[in-house]
Length: 154
Image 1: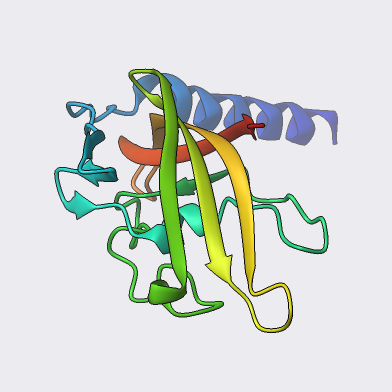
Image 2: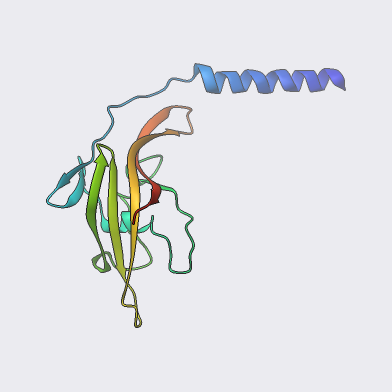
């Protein structure tokens, strides 16, 4: 019994070592995000407002989305999504750049139209643009352009 446990433990350790140490890591140049006429742009085009709306705090106080993939991971990211923000039409969402504290950080005011007397809900957020490592099924790790909500702005 103890031999089987030892054998099983050694197998697991060997597998873990091969995944962590031995697998090739694919690296690509980081994708860039820049400002163009008040819009956040990537090498694939503008970032859809719906991608930014996913990072908003909901009207009920839910603040649960920390980051989104813009680029492709194993499937589509927000830039390639059929519907970047499924809750409503893209035309009902807009954003303004409030500030750019550093090269990869942006303070945004993201607004969405809502039904009822409130008419619009806005959220001022601070985002960081980064490449997150994403491990594919075959063990390769690729960098994926991502947006991370790192705070709120006054």
